[in-house]
Length: 288
Ligand code: C2E
Image 1 (tube, rainbow, N blue to C red):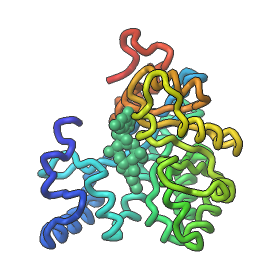
Image 2 (image 1 turned 60 degrees about the horizontal axis):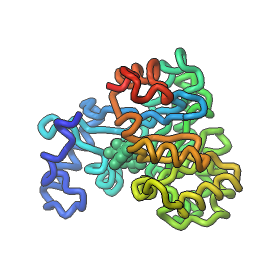
Image 3 (image 1 turned 135 degrees about the horizontal axis):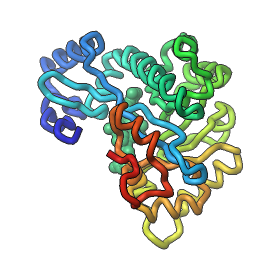
């Protein structure tokens, strides 16, 4: 996975998209073909609950196995896919593939949930919740087993476009989590109005945590979550002290390289079977 993380494709997949017209045209063509050519893959990163001492969720993260550039990270193509109007097809593929995998996992791990990212552009689709509802029933899954991660900035966008579709998703019963919480300025009213079910503290705040000091932003977010009865998670946990401090601040679910990097489905299955947060640092804990 490290080998082809897309860095060698840097000039081709320029993230700022100042690439030449020809490069953009060929990238668009290749992205359009990537689904039918089966070039997308999902990797999964565990969400860990310390109090339950187990993995409670898996986040599906897409990768593109490009025939000549190796594995391309989503930051290299999602933005472009949004601009080119290809993101809907990618999102559908991610949801279908992730839900099929979740259905397999839930036979052995019945409470497991899947989280998947939705792009702001996915909210252009008036049939968004129907598509998701069909995907769930095709895979025999209850709506509560799926959580959709959206960016905080979505709550600030044109609410006429977003509000009814978020409402439909909540009525369907899927969870809605805000995954970079604290970086935007969504109003507290919108958290309540849209029935947000989880706030995920942005990794930049976790990165800036030092051993002792107080952590005013994280405390404030924890207070909001508690006050609104919204579950709290943190992403980007890389060190044991961060885990301990977050635990002490009432964060009930964590994700980050400290526990595991995103891994393929097979390695994720091993983690589900063997990984226990309480056994961290004690021999083989399922971590690949
Ligand atoms: P995200 O949803 O916030 O996903 C977490 C990203 O943080 C992943 O990068 C993961 O590898 C990285 N990460 C996890 N733990 C740590 C840590 O402890 N430290 C650090 N430094 N990084 C950590 P990845 O897989 O490259 O994904 C980047 C972003 O691309 C995602 O951020 C998400 O916004 C987007 N993305 C990924 N898959 C999809 C998808 O299927 N659809 C859409 N629309 N966006 C996606």
